[in-house]
Image (cartoon, rainbow, N blue to C red):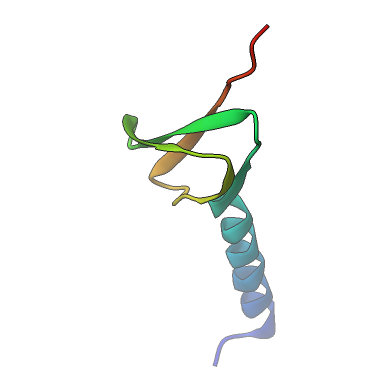
Length: 65
């Protein structure tokens, strides 16, 4: 049986991981998903799921100036 303090820490870390994995791309943006530093795909506006230790999300503003 795990001590209660350890369970609290593990739940806290899991919540942080989920919030880092869910990203919102705004309507006027597109996002580049990079896996281990290389381009993988383009994410359209809306909810995007990534895997934080391996993937990075780079947002690009598509508005005309």
